[in-house]
Length: 205
Image (cartoon, rainbow, N blue to C red; front, side, top):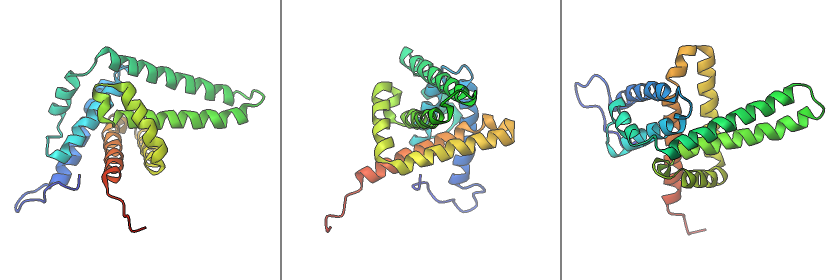
């Protein structure tokens, strides 16, 4: 997103501030679309697609967001949402059992939390993949590869999730704006990974 033009003379708000405002409006729209839960992956994927288009000077507005979203909500998108909801419920149940004080709860909680965090990273990075617009299995496969090959980016994803959760916990209304910054963080991590993949290596040794 560094290719944004500089502010013109006499312009009150620069393009970066405009993008920030558009991101918040997209975040609010995404939060509303996510309310049925099964639509959450498609909603977040659409937000990432709109923000990714800002690099190519496409409008990052709520209007374009709904234009992209209208092409979604296919059976595959709803199936991805169902898998995400079931995975979240399974992880929550596992952690609840671990907190119940059963024998071996502590050793069980550590791998359960690690598996849950890994699944969360892969799922979120899949939403940021362009393949998620048409092919969720391919997006998940590429996201899993990215998660392994780019541990720094995966750490940034977890940090973005923690920050969004903390903001929502501190002030509940911020939960309706959190999807915007989260989508922007996921998009930035994806572009960072793509930029490194296309960067020529120094062959001088």
